[in-house]
Image 1: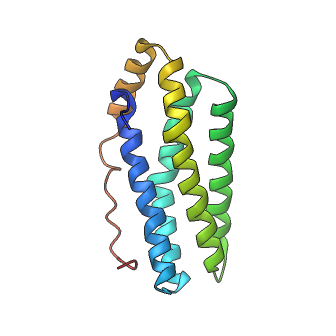
Image 2 (image 1 turned 180 degrees about the vertical axis):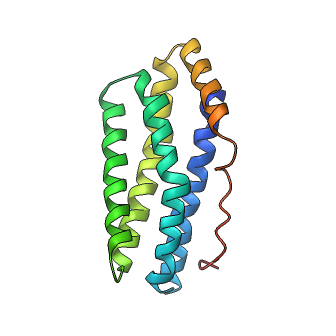
Length: 153
């Protein structure tokens, strides 16, 4: 899907979010112990999802308040709740991992298919350019998932 250059960085991060979901699902298919996957969830939440959500809410969603933006914010809160509950559990359950992966996957697909095209249509070119400049300043390193334990292989 062609994306406005100002928000390409966010779409690239969505790609890594989908890989996060795929890795969890692959590990579950291979019956990897949930305790081995849980630290990866913490790593990805702290280093990728949490900062990504903050950027979207601070810079992208602040430009337009409507029902689609409200839905995205509600989904962020739901995913945060799921992640926090999963990270607090001892022992973590495979169902919790699967639920989180599904929520993240569904959310990314909503943003890419509905929300981003909507924002690209509703925001002015000036708003998109300012957004793009701000995101460029904020985006040096999160495009890499360098978690050392490749439990999904």
